[in-house]
Length: 241
Image 1: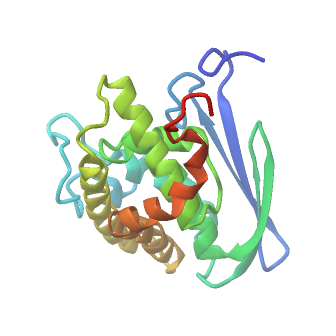
Image 2: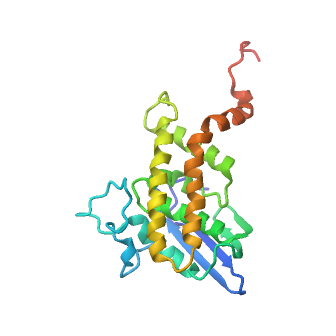
Image 3: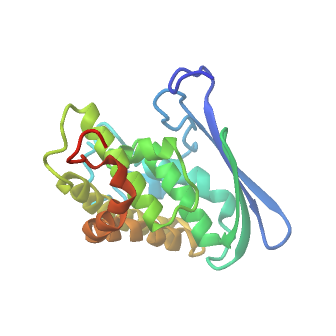
């Protein structure tokens, strides 16, 4: 098995939707094997709602003179179009195929689309969501709150280690990131409102955003709940134990 980041071929993730009318739709995503950035070309021509100036995120750091279209919106435009006829509470079968595993769930259209949107936004090149790209590399479809929190904290601590920090600043940096992600999700929802004929995409974004608002508030409580899992890592008074 080749080490992570040394594979020559693109990595792929496929979402197959079994729709209520008996038809299927498959979304296939390819990612660079080294940095896991999305390899999909943007739609040509791009929809009007992908222009950077259209309902631009309040905290967007991009320069309109250099970047004309929102990177996340461009990738979402391609990903969501095949699912535009769905209604939020449609029950759909979703099969997610990755190199390591295949996951199947029977869930609502909005829940399934929320998982897709999270994957796409994290790998699209948006300066804020790009920080979640390490989590996207180890994509966990339909993760619950506890799983998302655990993965977020692990990603943050590893990022601090790579940056040469011992993590002494605590989790303020992670909390600030999620506050900015909330702004991105809120304003992206407005874009999707202009793009979608039905509501699943916006409702899916609301589900995704729930984690960005819950995580800072739940961080201390959740760490206390996770602490017993790490008993074996505690330094013992008797080094022989």
